[in-house]
Image (cartoon, rainbow, N blue to C red; front, side, top):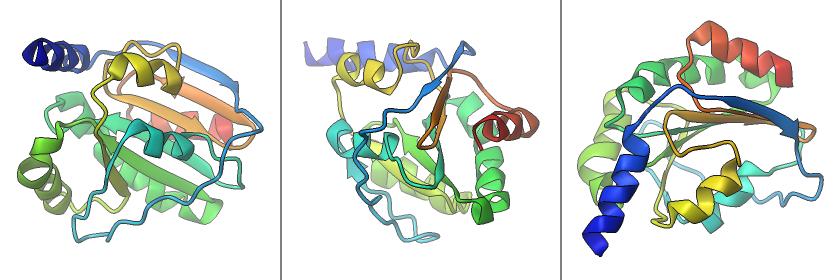
Length: 180
């Protein structure tokens, strides 16, 4: 049964397809807890359950958040990561923060995720989501999400948009500007 669950979860994320987007109003009552800090450039990657990650997806402060769900084994995800890094750097003065949520298996943290973060010098905050009950948390991220990656949420206190697709930099910047 354990192997079936792991295989099902892997198949859910392997699709890495381009799908839909959804824009909605953000909930006004969202909890605003601080993001756990990582040591930028040192490869520190906190491992979070969905319950720990969820408040990061519902903040209502003066910042616009760009949250990308990705994995080291997903080629479209890896291709677009530099665009998220560039966006985070170019819009930092406009209260934009990028959060990269790795969906790699937790046993790959030390041998794959952290070396990947170091090799590519990722400056955005990176966390690894360790919650095997994807059927429970995927619809909490977005009802429109099939579970395929890459997937991205761009939101602030007033507006929320979900994208199940790969981005070019121009597309990502355009999506951000619709929220700012």
